Length: 224
Ligand code: AMP
Picture 1: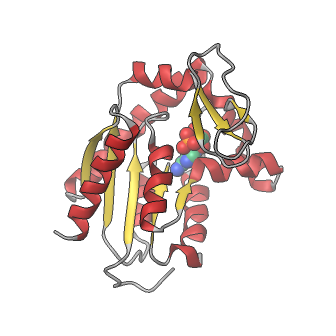
Picture 2: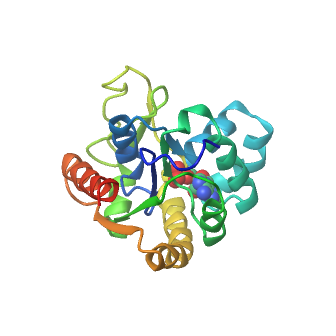
């Protein structure tokens, strides 16, 4: 863990339902502030793809749209935050998901207060978005095709990689993931509201508008 007390650090946590645009926005914010985008979902999917011990342990949970255990997730994130690229801060996408994970993050010496951003997007919009989501197998950027049945372009416009549908983006699994999110998010949001570190962002705007809203809030927290 990097030494505490550096006021240039930016520690950001994004909270929101699957498909709310967290991942896309996290990549933009990470580039702007030169901090790593740490997506626990991406780390777990990469482990499943590699067939590592971690991947084998979590594969069924991911496929079912459930949650991986708090202890395993906390160890994974601790290890990741300890790497040198997180010395100026981080943007966490998908962690914490539960109150226990939030408490574990609070106990880490992160060196600056958390900036917690909650994405508000209705379930009907989430189902529509995830029905048309494709992810680049190479650069991991998320693309949208024009309809759920439309195969869309088969290669990524940024790097030429193959676009594929995430296994857990089928409507039934998305409904389960939304239900899981709803059951855990309420105490998580209450935890951060109590500490006045949470801001709610309308996730329905155009990509650039949402990024601008996020940056405005981050800047206000850096220079109060
Ligand atoms: P995501 O890409 O954030 O939607 O995550 C995909 C899946 O990974 C989730 O549906 C969970 O099964 C698992 N996962 C990711 N992050 C966490 C976490 N912090 N705690 C528990 N499970 C997680």
